[in-house]
Length: 135
Image (cartoon, rainbow, N blue to C red):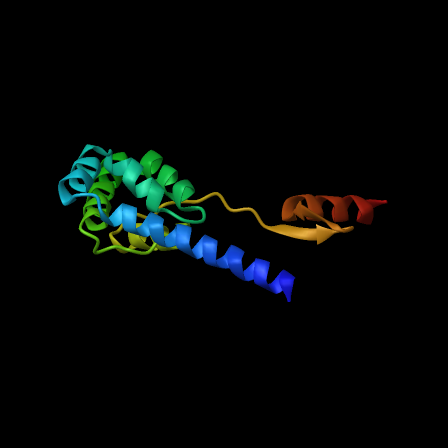
């Protein structure tokens, strides 16, 4: 029983600390938050909002279509600042967005397969099987 009580107290303390952080973040004045958002670079704001492989897609887009990507980044940043966009965007969603507006971003792809308990690229697997066939 004592162990359960200490775990319960830990959970309560953790929840209380979480609630205090939420309250302190809500007590900032709107002008402070607005100043912070306005001074932030749109690209930095978007990068913080990206999920799995999102930055990789963004970097490829910037290399392949720099002018168009800059414009899209500014629009995404506006949506984030106005809170119309609330969920993180992963690489697949960002790639779909670019393709929807007509930018076909090329991504480097690599297929890995399992061989002898470890993952190797498909090209290595094929080349090693060709070598074993020649023997």
